[in-house]
Amino acid sequence: MRIVEVISGAGLGGAERALARRLQFAPRGVETHVVITGVEDSHLSVEMAQYADVHRPHTAPLKFVRSLDPDLIVTHNPKEAIRILSHRTLPARVPVAVVAHNEISSEGGFKRKLLDPLMPILNGRAWRHLAVSSRAANGVQCRGAKDIRVTLLGSTVSLGAEPRYDFWPQDTRVRLAAVGRFSPQKNLHNLLLAVHHSQGELIAAGVHLVVAGDGPERSSLLALADRLGIEQVLTIREWIEPSDGVMAAADALLIASCAEGGPLTLYEALLAGARVVSTDVGASLDVLPSDERCDFFRGSDVISLSHGLVSLARGGRVDETERANRRKKFEFLSTHDRTKFFYDALDAI
Image (tube, rainbow, N blue to C red):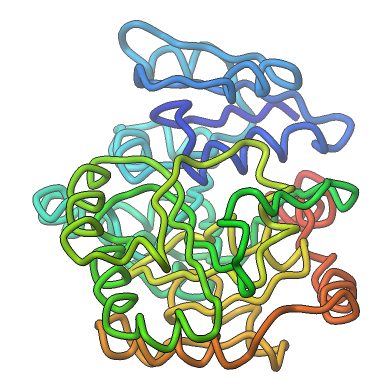
């Protein structure tokens, strides 16, 4: 079975990371070609190339996809889904599976205005939609679809990784992390304001939050943190790859987002045994209710996030028994295990 997977770039986003990790566990009999239509690149394209043929067509990507003679086309971005589904004959000749990686169509408001009306019109031309969460299944990327399967992506951590306690100040007693792209949907400005609002209790409990990542809002977040004077309880850092050691040291991962795909960090934290406190976005509603020590923020506003931070501070550190139990409970979220479900949903097993 020849599968052609179309993605708009090979950056460090969740869709690209999930694809690169999944390919190594593709079932026998599946031949994969990855077509990257944009210029964004990272080490992930090299990882993909170990398990698939990776192509970067300079022009006419649809013509190139057709030339590969696929048995199945899989798209990973709304733009690519629209490009392929709007073709006059291609969706009728080759089954198209759309992977819905988020509950919204785009971070940008202008792009959403363009994409949101188109997707419900074209989605019915797809053979199947694979939604990475229940919320994604109910979002605009799947609206109008005729067959939707919820398929959690999962991730990978090394359980033997040495904990990176040095990611936090030496005197930290409760280690919190918020990880991801510094973009509007991550709601990090409100998170910083919530830290300022609850700073007294966080200091008293020895809590320190590291906000790690990069993206378009990095400069404004650094300026806001400096203006708020919260350096005693918060540090903004670049993310470390691989993240295994950081997740092994964190007591809890915070997800303050207004919309999400997985995110993959949700799975990585649980696989490493850390608690997770999240807004009700992405796959959090699919996995967190089964863990009594994981929780949800009441909302994404400053006061709700502040209440959640104070609750985490009062909850203290994660001991090794709790960490080991959580690792065991969520081992089904490993990339190895989730890959079987993904290809099963594609009828490729």
